[in-house]
Length: 142
Length: 142
DNA sequence: TATCAATTTAGAATTAATCTAAATGAAAGA
DNA sequence: TCTTTCATTTAGATTAATTCTAAATTGATA
Ligand SMILES: [Mn+2]
Ligand SMILES: [Mn+2]
Ligand SMILES: [Zn+2]
Ligand SMILES: [Zn+2]
Image 1: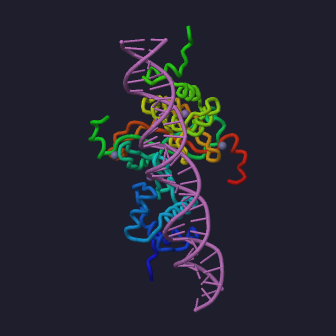
Image 2 (image 1 turned 60 degrees about the horizontal axis):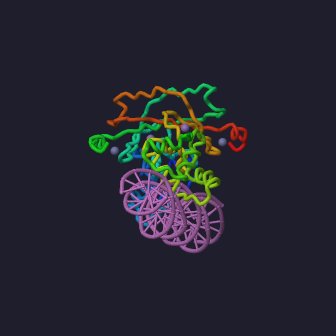
Image 3 (image 1 turned 90 degrees about the vertical axis):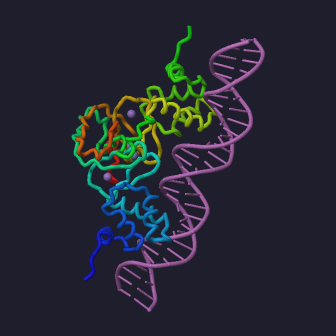
């Protein structure tokens, strides 16, 4: 009997056709903690799958995001970054190289009604800023 | 004797020339809690100051940001938003209309070394998500 | 195997933001 | 007040991320 990949599982669960392009993108994203941009994903997947279109990457990311299988991060001002880990967690971004790292810790972020400005709050996300191990050595220019 | 505006004070402090365009932009930003985009600022200031260039808005925002007199927020995925309140505080964004509101409350966000992934952490910012008073009524579509 | 809607694709279009180079003008000194 | 200079403004071109379009392809179903 054939093994069923996690990529296949996700497509079946979401009612999406199993195309080779999707398999490649989902395969690349599975367990990926690098928070890649659309271009990053395109570059990586194109290597194994020449002829693939950047539009397909955007299409696939849109489907996954819509179905709640992918987070779109706005932490990098230059471009959107994507995260296949949809569990609630926070992020740390290097101000130099823009590397994004996970912070797996829960915080108590209760806000009294008096400070909610009438909003109904549904979620939160903490952005931590700093310098990654590779960049903090080059502290000369700061 | 002439009154000195806050806009003038800021330009003098930063060593910037007092141009009418800058005065208008700084005047618009002073005390503004709407977290406007560059286009928002351009639209508002153009009304009182026709002929103004959008490039001047971007130039002025860049100077202010560089000198630490303005925060650039990446909370809105579509465009950068600006905040003349540079004191540390957090934000609440309406998922419908993208209105951004302040959260003036301090949180204890200590992270043990073991979870820092080798990063040197210099700051943080919490994004709260939800629905503003105007939008939460229209909860039909959710 | 035939059918058809979903998907992929290349390229055009959109949009936020940056860059360029020429014209302008604020400010400092004569 | 007049000159000079360099920061600033400006329109328009450019870049880069993302979205859109419409035609070709293909996975799934019968
Ligand atoms: Mn993550
Ligand atoms: Mn604010
Ligand atoms: Zn780094
Ligand atoms: Zn709203």
